[in-house]
Image 1: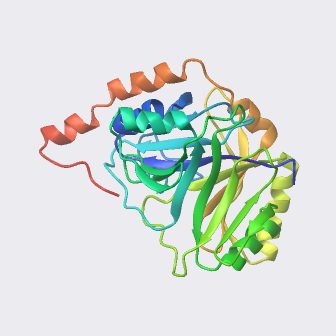
Image 2: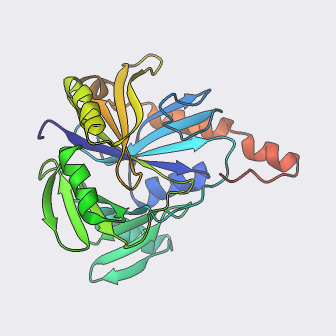
Length: 296
């Protein structure tokens, strides 16, 4: 399935200021685009919430050839409970390791040249202390599995990935050598998503979307959102199918042709984000009313 490519992982964030400091100043990522929405997404892109929210795409380069992060911020929620589903995003970046040390950010040694750090909200990042490659520093996203072979079967037969390596407890899959990989780790217990659950996005040719949906149906898989069109004001309309794997990990398959147009880097993205943060008075409102911003 070389026509398919991994795109991004969705993180729900509660503290936009602290989170963006981590991504911009620690990881060294750049804002690719930013969008504000007055109501929830019909494909639950921001989770099961109906109110005002924003989406910030951030990474080391355009999604045409980089795996990036989608940060979704619901104005009325302060933080999200973490499950055991997301096990980390691995990034090769000596620069990020140095930034952690210089800025006194949490940094735990895992092995030689391998470190662990945490984003605000608790999301785990694994940093490889090597120079950033000229391609994509993001190496893989790791998700938990309660039954490794069942997970591998889904991601190969339904998602169309190939297995790069596999042992009794871990499997690495992907679409091509140049793209960020998916790592599945058997945790030998049920996978709990709680409220901070994310979503993997995968681009495939538009004419394959129906086939992805049909393959899931034939396998009695879980279809969270059947083929639907999503509008972004002033930008391309994309079609998506959203599935869940055997452990409930969400996967959004999006039509590649329209998504390439939608995902172009917006040179005003960073300014739009800064303006939105400055205009966000939700914390002040809760403080004025002597209430804590609710947790999800």
